[in-house]
Image (cartoon, rainbow, N blue to C red):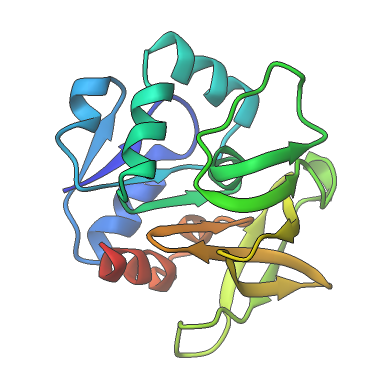
Length: 188
C-alpha cells in the first residue's frame, strides 16, 4: 500500500500513475493513515502551503520519523522541495521533511507562465527519455555524498535518489508515462 500525501497538489494524477505501475494507493492526511502505508508519494503543488498543512494536520514530525526510519518516499516538484534538507528562495518559516542531502532552489525554472515540457534521460529507466512537465519547478543546487544524481536538464539536476528516497523536479504523473512511478514501486 502506497500513500499519497493528500494535503494539497496533484493527488489524483499520482493515484492513476501508481495504479498503472501496479500499486495500490490511498490518501494520507492524518498520522494514523501514514502509519498504515508502506511508502509515500509527496505530490507537486505549493510547497509552503503543503508545509503549513503538514504542521496543522500533525503530520510533519511523523513524516520525518518515517523517512528517517527508511520508509520509501517519492516527491515530485513541491515534493522534491519537501524532501530537501535545505531550501533556497523559500519562506523563512517554511519547513521540510528532509531525507535527501540536497539544497533545492524553489521556482528555479521560472514562474507559472514559464512552465514547459522537456524530455529527460533518467538513470535506471529504460526505454528512452521520460517526458517531464516543469511547472514553477525547482532544481537541485547541490547534493551531498549520500545523494545520487539521476538526471539533469539544461545543466541543472532534476532527479535525485538517496537510499529509499526519490525526487524529481518535474511531474511525470501528468504525462501518461508511468516509468518513474514504476521505478518507485520497484523501490518499495
